[in-house]
Length: 415
Image 1 (cartoon, rainbow, N blue to C red):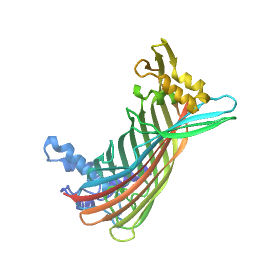
Image 2 (tube, rainbow, N blue to C red):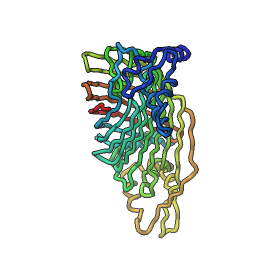
Image 3 (spheres, helix red, strand yellow):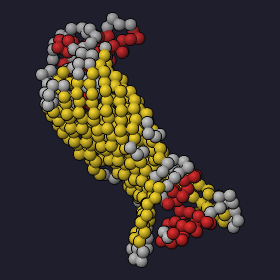
Image 4 (tube, rainbow, N blue to C red):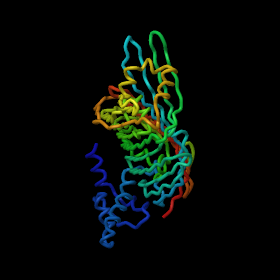
């Protein structure tokens, strides 16, 4: 298939391509390929600007090289600017399990979220290639995005950050004589910091009739309904940090862990469909099961010691909690801990230990998207959303990062 696609790109007449390009391009012969056309587009330009014109002509030509114009239309104006509003929620759940005697089970869950987050920003692009930056309106956080859409491929990059100062902590214990399960909000002096990097890319096997760009950045317009089998790859990396000394209690109950980094890579095969119910309208849906073949988790544990100046003694809080979980899970023990700790006389001492790495736990994931678009001559309106979920685990515990995100964009084409 690759050889056939290369042969078609080399032999196809490009006179039709030139009609839809904003800049004036040389009229190619039927034997010229895309790279030759791009080189011709840079000829005669100032030396320093030749790479820019080469890239511009390459993008213009490759975007329409393989499409059927009865199904897909390219707007005459190449640039677009969007006012982009985003609504999202990112939720992280971390679970730590405690080994218990006599068949009892105990665990601690910490759930943090940026809540219902609204942000606004701008996106600027050329023929499906663009950059965007959004700032949260409801809290701390920002999103940087990059997109690249071609005739048969799509690539998205997103960097997201947020901070949470009031996670929900739940402690559960189930034993023969008693059970305990309680959740409460925890106010942190130093918020949990979450930073995520997300990259996904797709290849459409029916790029002649189906346009991914028509659904997600409007560099193309789908004129007739079409679907396509698609292959995809996804990479995700996240860093969760709560290792400030003021968070010693939370770190101690998480068995000393104060920072987590995890990376995952997936590949999958799915299907996408563009439905055109009326002129100007487009409804697009995508679903892709994915195999998670790379999963690397790195945890950063800490020694957390309670030093009593009065007694001149040190106590390892992580060991204390692990060895006395049943006693700690009572209101009386909790009150005793609060009374025993003197913030003026005593100290909490924290030392970082060697990081622990867990590699390659194979699993499954999925990617889902939905988009609704309406096009005018120079304006377009797009609403689309997607959902992603990532899991991780090691011998200490496990976790799940889930994110849903909805974009509402008003775009204007120019130049």
